[in-house]
Amino acid sequence: MSVYSLITRRRSIRRFKQTPIPFDTLKKLVDTARLAPSATNMQPLQYIIIDDKDQVNALFGHTQWARLLPNNSGRPAEHQQPVAFIVILANKALETAWTNHDVGAAVENMILAALEEGIGSCWIASVNRPYVTEAFHIPENFKVDSVLGLGYPDEDPVAEPLTQSTDYYKDDKGRLHVPKRSLDEVLHHNGF
Image 1 (cartoon, rainbow, N blue to C red):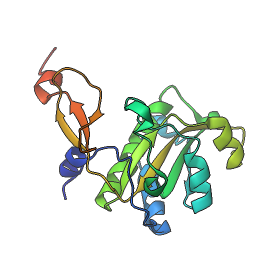
Image 2 (image 1 turned 60 degrees about the vertical axis):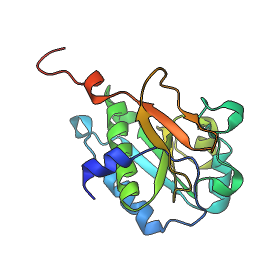
Image 3 (image 1 turned 90 degrees about the horizontal axis):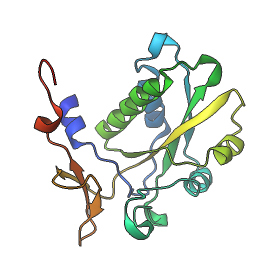
């Protein structure tokens, strides 16, 4: 599948089958992050793979999911939560004004590489950082940026044209709809 096709298929997944992801596959995802662009090539990011079921369950309890959906319906049920997480860390001594850009590039590489393997993902910035820092013994010279929840998809969200609101929603069958601006709305040529 082409990279363009992967990108157009990509949606955040919040319902996962409980099939484990091979550790070598998770390592491959981190390798794609390692190879992402980095401002001034400082490479301030490091990663922790969490795939132990008890640790995944504990970390899951310290994340927030799809706050726009009513009644916490964006949060995966116990039988549909991620089977692995990748914690994204930034080394404070190597940070630059562009570290957030490094994170974006690294995480998008992992998201697309995961999708190519048939793995869904949800990038989560709403995480209890003090818990993660303590639970996973993160040294004080690192800060928790975000986590990437992973698993084989158990849902099929759909992108649709944005008409009124950017709010995503579930239809009466429980399928997630994600409004997206049209290309004509966001594209300018040779000036605004």
